[in-house]
Image 1 (cartoon, rainbow, N blue to C red):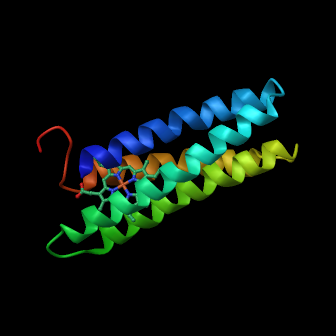
Image 2: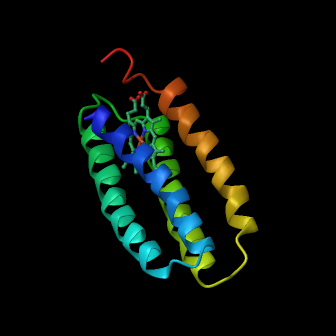
Length: 119
Ligand code: HEM
């Protein structure tokens, strides 16, 4: 489950930057396709995240924070892509993007016990 979770968000992060570069080079059709694949990946990230939550004996506040931070990252993927496609400003969302990623990586890798490195 955790491998699926990590694979899904690594792939999503890569495709997010692919989508940004497609948009930059004016490839609207390619952009739309990648955006669609990304939405499927969001569902997989959320489903595997919930699956992981079900394997936890007692869900404490750190798990809630982890889930919220993960949803925040997904929301920002979607917001940033939606706004670049319409040529709108994204700076506020990029600042949040950095904060949300730092938080989610800290909670996932450091704070919470499960790990792809020893499971
Ligand atoms: C793009 C969004 C997300 C990212 C980047 C992300 C990132 C991570 C990372 C880095 C880990 C730790 C992997 C490891 O220790 O080897 C993890 C684990 C986990 N994630 Fe996510 N996640 C995201 C979304 C979500 C969502 C939406 C949920 C809940 C609905 C969720 C729930 C969990 C849970 C329960 C764990 C196990 C925590 C533990 O005990 O170590 N994640 N995630």
